[in-house]
Length: 250
Image 1 (cartoon, rainbow, N blue to C red):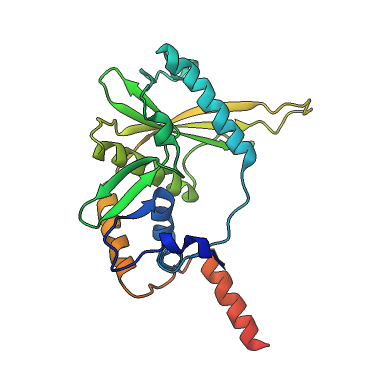
Image 2 (cartoon, rainbow, N blue to C red):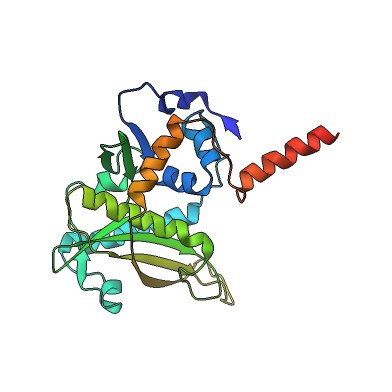
């Protein structure tokens, strides 16, 4: 854990009148471990940053460029046709703003809590009924077929549901079915030959965001209250406890 003094202005203050920003990732952190969330948003002590996934970022950027090509022409991407998705990439003047999670993103001020919920979406499609379809890009590399069946992928599903909720709160018609464009790097090739080939799956997911409103209320209650208990499964908390116990025993 480390303390970043530059984040003081972003720490929650019980007396503050202005809205406090809560990103999609912070909501996920709260659900994983309220204690780590409290340390981050109330005390300014963040978890150590993970390693940057530069290859994943490259895939993300290339996919955006590719879908933008078809967006400008108002036609479906071949992947959409191949997977029988009756939609085209959605064209909107604020798309780049909605994609930029660090500076802006898609936002909604939750009136009951005065929390400003935000997130950065990868892509949006629109169907014949005028409904937005939230799309998220994912990249991995494994021998088996990609899916959404792993326990840790609950974070992916929450991410989709928060984005769907945010666009609904911004007045858009949103289809409950979103899609993960999942790129799986093929690692069973005999030769690298200076290129990495991918198998791309378009996986539908029906979101259910009924948990979001109550979770936002719980987040505000957490921020206003005393230090919460850590999650029994939090790896960061288990590490801190192990270090503390070992130091005491020396």
